Image (cartoon, rainbow, N blue to C red; front, top):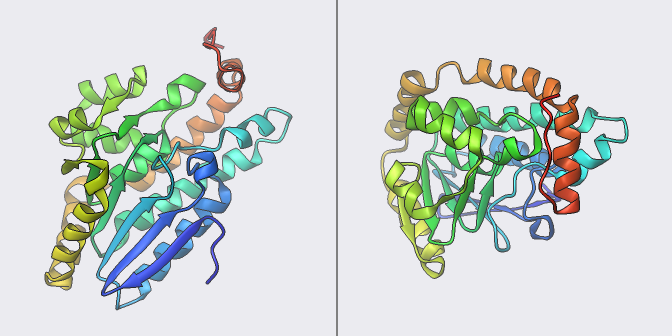
Length: 262
């Protein structure tokens, strides 16, 4: 299959999903999400695939939602935004339901849905320049791709609330101390460290690993699908506010937004 915004390959049991839209910091737009969903389905169906690695071309993992698409929506058609929230939810469920280990290899910015994409994976290897940001509050939106669900379970309500409501950046080292990533290495070592982990997992009993993931899902991730539905509802509501319009406009104009709570 040909993909517009992803490079996909399989070598010795390891499937590589490379987000490939560096010109817009690998924003998760409709085309990227369509590619990601399709390639995850391929990984689920292909018996040769034992482990999946999600990484990114360019300097950043993913800046999250496509701001240009949101700006277009301000002109009167928000269907792309609403559809995009559904698509990120669909991709989220595919990652969690895939009965194979998924590794996120993170460098640079992992913002908004890009942060949550990494959290959905079973393992996270981060470069020391990685920066994790729940950026939604800065443009008047709520987290999507399972953000509130994932962070509250990983960090507890207090810390999750802080990151979600303030949108402050989290460095790679802080993410390690919080348990959000498994390992931090230099940028130069990132690909090697990720591949070493993938090869180690690839050599382990696949059926057992798949069953372990299913049990972890039952213990921790039950309710994710309902949460994704709730995200869509609240995201639609937020996208109709004056604060959202102000947040997006201020971002485009590179100024601090002035929110009015409307």
